[in-house]
Every structure is written in structure tokens, then in C-alpha cells.
Amino acid sequence: MRGIVISVNQFDVFPFLSASGDPMPFSERVTRLKSSLIREILAAAQRPEMMSFAGGLPAEAMLPRSEWSDMPRSIGQYGMSEGEPQLREALAAQARALGIDCDASQVMIVSGSQQTLDLAAKLYIDKGTEILLEAPTYLAALQIFQLFGADCLTVPLLAEGPDLDALRQRLEMHSPSFAYLIPTFQNPSAVRYSETARDAVAALLDEFGVTLIEDEPYRELTFDGGSARPIVSRLKKASWIYTGTVSKTLMPGLRVGYLIATPDLFPHLLKLKQSADLHTNRVGQWQALQWIGSEHYEQHLLELRSFYRTRRDAFEAALQRHFADLAEWNSPQGGLFFWLTLKHKLDTRTLLDSALAQNVAFMPGEPFFADPDANPGYLRLNFSHIDPERLDEGLKRLAAVIRQTQLSQAA
Image (tube, rainbow, N blue to C red; front, side, top):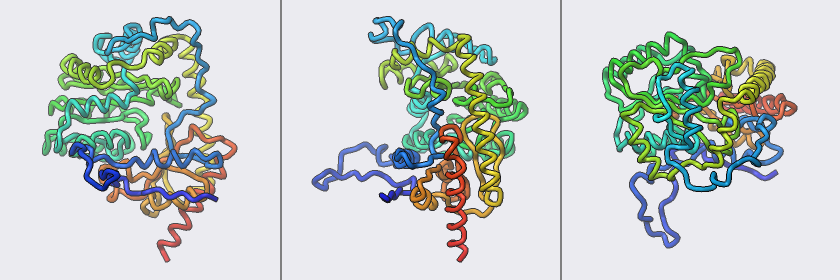
């Protein structure tokens, strides 16, 4: 069997020497560019025999069949940097239904919601800029913000939202340029903020005048029918950016996301968008418009929720069989992930090579923290993508790797 070795240090940086051995004339910012552990793992997971719990991939069986025959030829032309007007109107209407006070002039179509984070980083972050994050937080956001030189302040996540005492303390002692939060089925923890937590967070951000970036890629993937208004809809004073995507409900290959921003921020974000890629691909926007706000989209969401609920339940049953003595977890009420806390802590990055040798891929929890070495003992496991027929065997093998590693470390 071909061996795979993955660097477990997310702070490894790329070499900056030319073929002749001379230093490359790169920017100072690029020296902060770190290798992406998740991309290395996903590359390894492409082998057909691999049982992968690593990436947040939707199930291919639930990717909708797309029709292109009615697409106007004019869609192949250059477009507006803000995005297609009809799509912006549809997204604004959807946001208003959630309680967000906005109109289409505040909506921008972006190249996946991750571009929102890149634009926000360009708008706010210089080297040493303080920002506020959950701990744990979305790995790609952490990488983007650190690339631009942010000083990442963190607040622990509890079962129903952030530690509010810690949040107040951070805001009293620091002046973060923004807070980045994922309040609905958070990645990686699957935490959904309670109504009380959402109100309290909004009140604190208003009190201290801190901009909120609210990221909600998983809002539609709810398994219990529960819904809560976004935090931005509760703000009275603070500026905000709200971002979402069609990647989790339609097709990630479309690379279509959106942001909605307060009028004081939108013009600056638009200039940054124009300088980045002129506009998001119009073909993907056209396809998204065929779905958003339609009856067949609502039916698709119902089917998607039922499908993923079934996969969630099967995954949890397998976890009970193989991980009950190893880890603790909460059953996610939405999203795509289980977040496991090992009962006996170890750096889960050290499990990777052994797991991959057993044809099992997973995502260690440490890289989701701004200080990974201080936060050992977590795993993020995706339940949406793996073939159900291989689920039990994959978790059985992963559990065996953990047990063997713990025995070796105890010896």
C-alpha cells in the first residue's frame, strides 16, 4: 500500500527560495501563508478506498440536476460587480423574511461566501489588528485573517453560544475591529446559539460599537425545524456584514455566495470586489436564480433535510457503537458535522498518519483554534458525504487508531 505522510503542523510555511537558492521577492504578508491541513487531507482522501470523514462535502446524490438550455446567451457577457439584479432582489427578500432590515442595494454576489471573509480582511486587517473569534472557529476564516496579520482574540463556545462573561471581558479590555461569528450550526462545533445568547451578543456588540461578521452557511440545513433570527437582525447600532452561500444547498461547484452589509460598509466592499475579480461568474448566478425563492427550491430543501437527518442518525448510532468509551459529543440539530471531545486528551493531529494508513480520513480539531497546541483532544467528523455502507467500518477503524495511540502514549 502506498504510504501517505501529512505535516501536522498548521504553522508550516512554504519555502521562499528560487530554483537558484536566492530569496524570492515576495511580500511580507506571504511569509505568514501557512499550509492548509484540510486541503492536504482532502488530497489524500481522493483515493477510492479511502473512507473520509474529513471535508464538509455535500452528498453527491443530493446535488440537484441542473438545466441550462434556457440560459440567455447574454449571460456569457461581463456583468455588474454587485451581481445579477434579480438574484440580489431574491436574496434581499429571503433576508427580510429572516428579520434582516435590508434591500437589494445592500446585497453583493460573491465567489463563494469565503470571498466575503477575504474582502472583510482586506477592509479591516493590518498587521496587529485585533479581531474577535469563537474558539473553535472556521479553519479557513482563521487562515485568511492570520494571513493578513490579525491578532486573533477568542471567546470559548458553550452549548448554547459563546461564554458571555468572557465576551464582555474581551470587549472591555480590547477594541477588536470586528467579531466573526457562526451562530447557526457552527463549523466545527455544530453549536446553535440560543435566542438568549443571540440577544446578549447583539446587545454587547451594540454597547461596544463592534462590527459583526455573521456567517450562516448551514442555516437551511436544520433537522428539528428550529429557526432563530440572525444576530444582525437584532443589532441597533453596530455595523454588520451577513454572509451565506448556495454551496451547502445547491452545488458548491457554482461558487456562488452572497453578502449583505450595512450602507456604511457596502461601498468599500464593492470597491474591493471590483479589484479582486470584477464580478462573480454569471453562469453560476443564473443557475442559482433558477432555484432561490422558488417552490422547487423549498421542496429540495425539505428533501435535503430529511436525507441529512437520516445520515446524522446513522452516524450517531455508529458513534455509540465505537466511540462511547472514547469521546463525548452532542447530537447536531443541523449542519454537516459531529464535534467530538476525547475523554483522554491527545493531539489528534498525531493520529493522521495511522488513520490514513487504515484508509480513514478525518479532521483534527486543533487547527480550528487560534492556539492549536493549547487545545488538544477534538475531532471534527463529517457525516454527509461518506457512503453509508462504509460508515461503520470507517468509524471502527478510526476508534481502533485512537485506542492504539492512547495505549502507546500511556506505556
